[in-house]
Figure (spheres, rainbow, N blue to C red):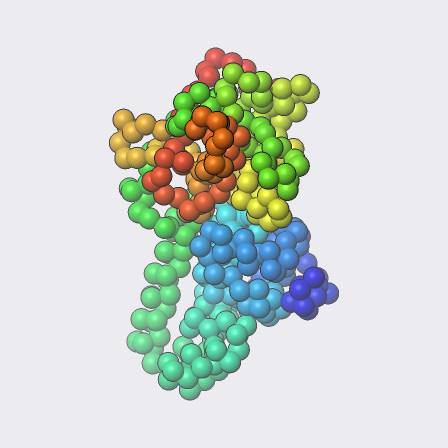
Length: 355
């Protein structure tokens, strides 16, 4: 356990308030609820830092440890990165709404986001304050400013908050909504489907083994579609996200495809029986690979990130070139325009969903 984890472990938690952040009554309760959110995630500070980095967020574990100790509101960008790393990105608007309400109620010096310093990197935050010429301790710049300047700073802060919390998807907008690709049309009840890498032909996304032998559980690979394997069910959830479920061909058990964030199979995709609501490692945006309704194929983008699934290149073949592609693993990688990230999704309507 990191020293930062131990430092705040003895504090009380507010497990009920994790479900209703809008009921938090002050900065101290808000901090306690964040500790409960971290405890619920089951992740260490180092794991949260790594998970945030994978989606392009900056979340230093020393900063998070300080945030979870101090009875004050964190910066909004730090809060957004922390909530997403804990697997609660779909509920980010609730947390940002609570932050906004409490920051107004407590005044500018109640929220660390008022001046951009958070105190976790104490010397650095003080240095930033000195460079800004405030003459006061971090987090209290507005107190000595003239009313007109204070109002201007507050307006700027509100604009920044809108940029963080204004997206109804609950994510920090990474691109204009109008530019987002069209999503795969699905009914609310979901549908059975077949997912095929766009090339080579005749291969489907199915269950197999990691070729190096370092990981012995089943992972998602590409193999001939004619071979027996799990059935795929696409289950839409809110905000345009979809969970991809596999039905075991023998016992008919269902599992959610899950991107592994650590261990020897890091970046690979494993079917897991534990389907967790709001876990971005199990949620995907199935979006058109290119612009326009005529674009062929879809991209499987991990929720709230710029990471997509792609097929790992095959090892050097000793037989026909196609043999190198059989068994290639699906792996998380930065989204791009390469053919390895293009998938064909064939919907199978008119069949009952998993019972």
